[in-house]
Length: 568
Ligand code: HC1
Image (cartoon, rainbow, N blue to C red; front, side, top):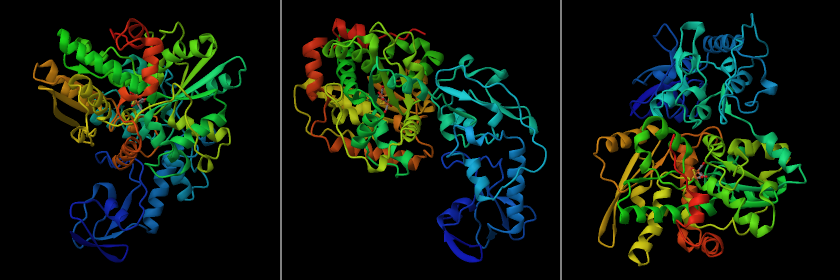
């Protein structure tokens, strides 16, 4: 530990931490903009400056390590004036569109303006007039609102390692954008939205699809059904001020009923179905000498990534569509037949933690029902907004239950949104199918946790199966490079595009950090542990679906509706 003086008080903090971290430990708030707790220090916005006695210049607290005996002031006329000047300079080049900005209400710059009493914009306004990038179904980039903090480029380069967003030009002309002024649709962007998740302002955000959902809900000729991804139930409460890790499944169902959906179903149902299909695909490949290792296919950012970067490895990707798309295909076939509703009149909405799911729903492969299988995708943040538009008071809602049959699921599905969850769910089923024995302890702890790459070896009645799990595309790249070099001896690999899995998706409530990821992950495991049925093959609604419609895993109907080949 080290002792130093913070605002006139002697304090003790762990050695090696920054002034910013030390101040936070002692309840002193220092403003930040470019800083993000999960990222490397950038120190380019300078709003976190402090006075260090004996130093002529103000120091960036995010980039200055505490030294023993230091005397630090975080509030002084000089500091306030400096921060206000920095904010004025940012405002002079920032469109004054706060009232109509998608970040109205949760903009970090706007919050700072309020905290620092910025009641006017001094000086001349010089705002840019650069074109908006609306080239993808997932994201909107508004370069005019960019404050050049560099968070998006940092996550794009150093976490996802996709390298799409760069800092171009110098000084006041700096722009953070894809190369040569290209649009996101022209480059190898996977639409994961991690850039949007860390943007402090409205410079890059999800494409808002709320209007199309309202139009369907308001159309008496449409039968509107909704599915909810596993990760949303452990994060939606954050949109209403509740802490990360709050489990809100029952209230979520109530809220969706209040919006007017005709049926409230669950992506967890088709997560269980994915395990049945993918588990049998693995067994089939093992028996017939198919391409191994098998790799999961449910994360659309990951699928887009392998298409761009490792197309020769595509035969390893499972032919299973994602649970979102299996749901859409079944809603407009199985459910349509059962309910007697023409699939042309069924409108399927997905609530997803993910921006890439918007892209996935519009892929040409995704119309096995004869229609676009999923009509609209809202992120968790958009769900928060549409509920506010409808005046739903989320905190006071009573719990409600999903509709039958596409709303019945197990604990295995509940952990799909967590890194390692798909693997664990698959092992629960594959083990019992192969060995014919009951798996007493369903928790495969070796594949749990936030370590970038996890490995485990599972004994299936004498056959050893080595599995790997990676989350975040930087980690995926390491596994793919091993595979490309012929150095990977895995049988089954789970890859999730976003750090932490879908609970850390690009469409999740703002403020996602590793600490928040841990809380959401822990909540998902609590959902699983609290359910009576924790293995996908024990889901009675799935058994009925096979009996009434699909016949058996990998059947012809399954292949037609639930499988595809990504060819790029
Ligand atoms: Fe996911 Fe999936 S887990 S991809 O992370 O396989 O988005 O939550 O819905 O489809 O089930 C996302 C989450 C989600 C699919 C499932």
